[in-house]
Length: 150
Image (cartoon, rainbow, N blue to C red; front, top):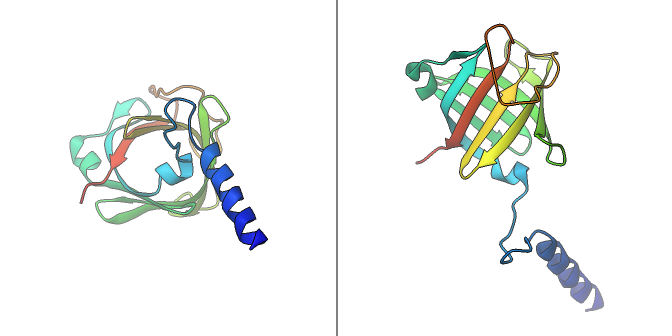
């Protein structure tokens, strides 16, 4: 019985530690917020905006730390992700496991705004971006995603 009470107490502490000081609203870890399927709403590479026809076909699905990105139903790449929300801006690393850059590491940053998440990545092997921007010749990608609706 004592172990059950201890377990309940520990679970309560864990739940309380995820609440904010303002109103007690639970804060979900970033990895939990990114789970599921997302659709791209804007994107650019090397400072050039993606055409609407390409945007419409982009999907990213995160299950655990395994990410699959498809374009028009075809595999674009697969990666395992690592997040660090203690950095500013928050950082994300892709360890590419499938697609044309398999074996490479791609470093990026991310930020949430409501139900939208933005990412900015350098090219595989390049330094991590420090801002959400992409201009001609920088080999960066910039994108915004929202959860897919059934």
